[in-house]
Amino acid sequence: MIIAVDGPAASGKGTIGRALAEHYGLPHLDTGLLYRAVGIAVLRHGGNPENHADAVKACDFSTAMLDDPEIRSEAASRAASAVSAHKDVRAALLERQRAFARQPGGAVLDGRDIGTVIAPEADAKLFVTASPAVRAERRFAELTKRGVHVMLDHVLHDIEARDARDSGRSVAPLIQAPDADLLDTTNLTIGDAVRQAISLVEAQVK
Ligand code: C5P
Image (cartoon, rainbow, N blue to C red; front, side):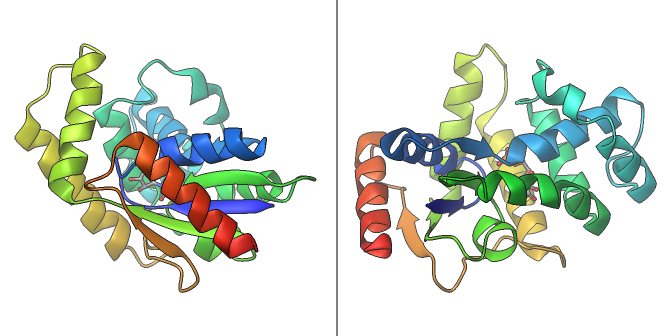
């Protein structure tokens, strides 16, 4: 069984993807990490994530960056969003994601284009969303807990900028697949969101 979980930043898709993987005993891939690794690789080599050649070159040594302590930082988020708009970067990461999705027994992947590009054949597809204000509060709480000092309105601004870029790019934009179920987590606890995700998946695979 392949489960595709897509949605914008801090929508809850990562938490839901991990919970579904645990529930069904499937391996899980957070595909945002792959783009973050490329973003960090560009920054570490003094490149510009907006620059096509810098971003493409960074794909070659990005795997080594997956353990970088800064991979979840806001700088990495911004760099990831910038590199992910380059068609050749997406192409470089495509096969790895497809192979993960198609391993025997199946998998859960979360990202932006899993249900549309990476695994259009997925058995279940969710599009997880929440209002920008609630997503900013969640990201703010997560960063504050990690001891990162940020301002809520900066986090909101970053999230809105990333939404605009991820939805507006010409290659693999962030959109809900026609056969994906929408799960709006704005007013849901984590527990309720996970329970609803499981029932949506159950209904799709029936
Ligand atoms: O999910 P996460 O916030 O870690 O993703 C970081 C960035 O990577 C996103 O803003 C998006 O631009 C990009 N991304 C993507 N396609 C994916 C996963 C992430 O373009 N499948």
